[in-house]
Each structure stands twice: as structure tokens, then as C-alpha cells.
Length: 438
Image 1 (cartoon, rainbow, N blue to C red):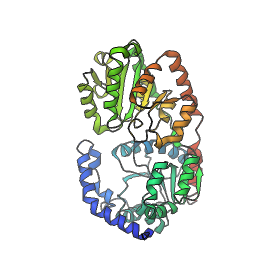
Image 2 (tube, helix red, strand yellow):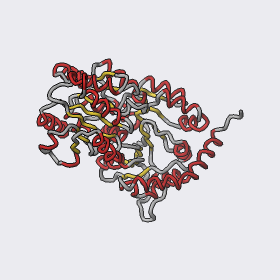
Image 3 (cartoon, rainbow, N blue to C red):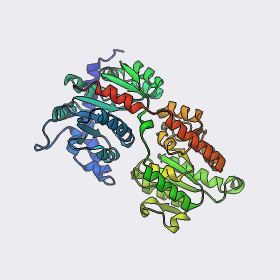
Image 4 (cartoon, rainbow, N blue to C red):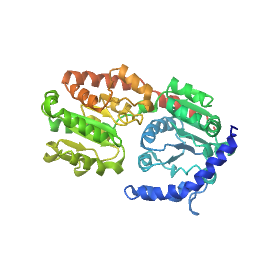
């Protein structure tokens, strides 16, 4: 079979994207029913800007952080960049509503914020012509063929920061090698999280690749939220098991396992007083769905959105809390004695476990942590986390970790693990500054 050239593969990819564009726009409008920000400035998703919008902002440092997790990690890099170049002006782009909301906190006078257009040739060319950045920084896995080709044509150096690539993603990329490899090769610099990530990124075509660590170790939890969470835990006067950033399908597994441990012969394994189960779904559009699942399980539910600073008496006696709020994970980790890692019980690769460690909350992991493989292994080796085969085992292990001496030791190990791996923000900031014009 004839191998496609990079140009032919990119043209076919572009044609498919253009055909799908009406569906993408309709999907934005649909998601905007529950998250109105998705309906904001839809034209920017196509690289179109109002006639009276800002003129080209030549010389800004452009940083793309697609979602909430990437934006929070980018905050540490932005702080380190501003410390080195106080005059730097930032263009921050996103792909999700949660990322856009979190990014607003990073804005300073003279900075700009925008949606990143979909990866069509016209959209990305108009975007680059509008903003004319001095250098572009993409976070983690954001390799877009047309965007990187257009940046190369416009002589905008591109850096992939906090870069990671799982073995699964590498193999998937090999099937699209003619499309992906030229994009990866066009990157001016890749700053990888781990040596394993670096090896896979080099195999995908990246050069040079520098191992710089993981920015998420440099993100400090909100001290006020931590204190508030600990106050809630004291008011409850019973242990708290947190299911953090759960994904579709995991809550049903969790509720079934939780019910099984509280019934029959397993009841003896449940500590007294009976623990509170705190569920925080990964995506806000699923809050009502998860609340319905708890109701179907016959459990008394209290929703975080129903109170302000302190849970009312009715919430203190509930069996389950639903963390239906955004950007309060430090509060939830502060309240919890132990946490189950969402995304690791369904085959989704897991979520960031570093924030939990920085809050001193030990983690119970499921079998699927390929998105954060090395961080998961290091946390287990440090005693900050344990791995289990499935949700029933995870619930049982979490309950066994509620003993005060076990929990205190695991919490100390989690804090030590988080403190031992900092410094990535400074290393990456130095590398990015090296790409900026003097």
C-alpha cells in the first residue's frame, strides 16, 4: 500500500475537519445549555474576530491550556515567567469552559484571552495573523497538525511544555504517522515530564526533547480552601472517603461497592461512626446525573451547592455529599481522610493525583493510570498511594486506611512525595524565555 506524504495526509485531515465543522458548532451550542460560556464568541472557534477587535498584538507570549487541569498547571509556569520577565504580555487560549474560567485568574493588564480555533487551515492562519505571537507554548498533549504547520510558515517558534505521551497514545499516533510526525517535528522544543515520556516523544519525531519534570508538582493548593475543608471534617466528626474527579460509569460501580460494604457480612469491616462518601464528578454537566444515581441507591444526599461557607445540620447527617462546585478540589481534599482516583477504575487513564498529595490526602488508585503512569508509580513507591484491581477492592482498602495511625502515616508520605518533585516551573520558564526575542 502506498504511504501518504505528510502534505497529502494533512490535506485529507483538513477536508474532513471542514466537513465536520457544522457538527462541531452545533455541539458547542448544545453544551452551552448547561455551560453558557460555550456559546460565547463562537466565531473565535473559527478564527474570526469582530472588525473592531484588538489589532495584532505582536510580541506576546502565547500559551495554550486546553482545559482546567492544564490551565492550573500553566499557572505555575506563568508565575515563573513573570518573575523572569515582568514585562511579558500573555495571550492565553483554551478549548473548554472550565479552562477559560480558570484562565481569567491569570490575566494581568495588557494580557489577552481567547478560544483557540478548531484546527482548520483558515482558522489557524487567521488566528496567527490576528495575534502575531512571539512564541507559542502548547501544554501537555496539544499537537495540532494545521496549527503547527501554520506557525512554522509564520516563523512562530512552538514549544510543547509539560509534555507527556503514553504508550497507548504513541501506538495510536503510529497509525497516523504521516499526519502527526511532521507536526511533532516542527516543534522548536519539547519539555517532557519524565524520561519515559521523552523516549516516546523522540520516537514520535520530537527533537530536541528535554526532561524538565511535571508542573503540577509546583501548583500549591489554596490554603483557605484547605483550612475550610478541615473545618468541615471536624464538624462532621466522622471519617470521609472522597471519590475525586469521577467519570461516567464509575459512580455506579462506587455506589454498588459502597452498599455492599455496608450490608451483610461486610458490615463488620466498616468503621464507626459510619464514614461519609463524598463524590466529586470530573465534569459539571454530570452533576445532576450523579445526584440521581445516589437517589436511586436510596442514600441521603446533600449537595455542596446548597450551602455557602459551612454545611447545615441536615448535611452533617447525610450519607453522601455531592461536590457539585468548580475549582474547590483543595477544599474536598482537605475534608477527606482518603481519596479514590477518578478515571482509574474505568479504562480512561486516571486523573492528576499530585494535587491530592500536596493536600496531604492519600490516594487509592484503580488499574488504569496510563495518563500519569510514572507519577502513579512514584506515589505508590513513596507510600502516598496504593493500587487496587477494581472498585470493590478500592472501597475496602479505603475503609481500612481510615484508622488514625494508618491515615496519618499515609498523609505524611503524601506531603513528602509532593515536596520532593518540585522545580519544573523554573526549568521550563528558563527554556521558554530562551525562545523569546530580547
